[in-house]
Length: 345
Image 1 (cartoon, one colour):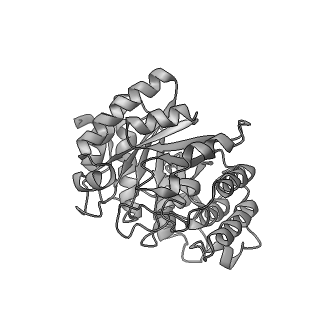
Image 2 (image 1 turned 90 degrees about the vertical axis):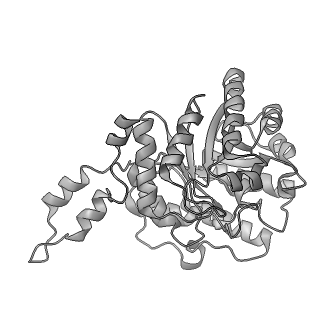
Image 3 (image 1 turned 45 degrees about the horizontal axis):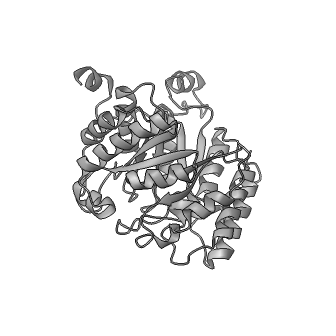
């Protein structure tokens, strides 16, 4: 761990090279100092592309009071695939009494097109959920562990350590079964009940989760309390500990910092970003955990930055309008209200 500690940059020191470059971008004549800027940008970890994971059909719909019919859920997912989204969190295999919006998980999966254009993810919280997901033939399972005891008890009826131990059992079985599995660390940036969560604790949880070789580690800002510096720091710490491990980030826009945090995540080297069409969603077991970052708003920002996603923005905007009509209420996303700037790529 000492070597890992030396590899990360100390908390509180912002490593965003492009932000630093913007601090003094012009010389005394108002001309951009290109040489300095290019030298600074050369140290940026930002990739030219990122994969967007649509979580609207699961995380988006699970907190909506109006339950979307199965056929409409399938249409939502079909539209997302048609827009070019290649990974979609479609259902969760949880107790239908606690989350009735997900009671039709098996039926949804049975109706989905299996043409290879998208990988369908099912969220699970325990071994029973895994067994249901495996029987329903999901392409991937995402297992949620929780960073604090109080939140873990509310979410899964376990302690934090017990959620990790349960993941290790499920992850080992999934590997044996040939089922792709990923681990999601909920409350990675803060807990609605216990407050701040030390980043060292998240790295320790990641170490224990990595013992069974997940396909990726997802850092989840379940209640939307993160800030860009914290996002950058935590990603750098996890990447230092596991250089070959793909990093996914799940962000909420509870306090209107979601897009700034997404920018920080991409610049820090995250390969996957979760978002929901229209910005719908939240966690039913975390107070005031409002919607995910809106997929269309995120996509617009990435397009303007020149970061490739392979997703059709116009189709996502159309899908958001379709979802808004079905839910019968305005959605949080801004792009549907403001429109796409004419020069957007």
